[in-house]
Length: 272
Image (cartoon, rainbow, N blue to C red; front, side, top):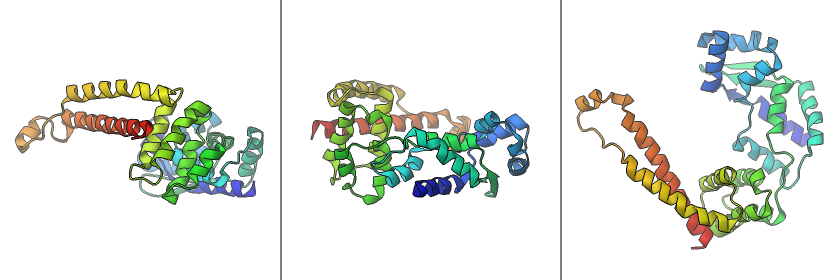
C-alpha cells in the first residue's frame, strides 16, 4: 500500500497542462482573461465549492487509459477493494497533495488538491480490477515490453469481466503475439469496440464485422472527398484554410482507418 500511495501522489502532483476545455470553462464561467487564469488558480480556486472545482478540473483529473497503465503495471493481478479507497484518499489529502497546473504560457501553478479531485482520480483508476491468470501470463510475454503497462490497463477494463467476451481479447493477443500484425493502437481500438458494442463472444463479433464494413465502404464511397486545389485563387474562393472539404477529407481518413482496422481484426480472429 505505501508503494501505491506514493505512485498516486506522484501522478497527481506531476505537471498537468490545462486543456482548452478547462481554459474555456474558467474564462466563460468567471469572466477571466486568459492571462488572469494563473492568478485565479492560486487565489480564487480554493474558495470555490466542491462541485465548482469538479466542474472546472474534471477534465484534468479524469484518468486516461495511459494514466491507468501506471497502476495496472504496478498492481499486476492484485486489486485494491473499494473499501480501501477512502483511506487512500484521506492519506493523500493529509499529505497534502499539491497539483502543478500548467497554463497556456507554460507557467506552473501549485494548487492544493481538494478531496473532490482526488476522489475523481482514484475512483476511475480501476484499482479494484484484476486480470485473469492465463491472460496475465500472456501479457507478460508480449513484445515490446514497453507496451505491457498499457496492455494491462486494457485487460483490466470492465469490458473483459465477461469470460466469453474476454476470449476475444485473449484470442486476438495470442494470434498477433510476436508477429508483424501486432499493433498497440489496434488493441486500444478493440477495447473501444468492445466497450461500445459489447459483443457477446468471438462468434458474435465476427458476425457483426461484415455489416460494419459494408456501412463504412458505402459511407466512404458516398463522401468521395474533394480533390486538392491546383490554383491558389480557386482555393481562396473556397475559403482557404477554412475549406469545408478538408474537414470532409479528415472524416474520410478516419473512416478509412476504421475500415482497415476492422479488416485486420477480422483476419486475426478468423486465424488467417
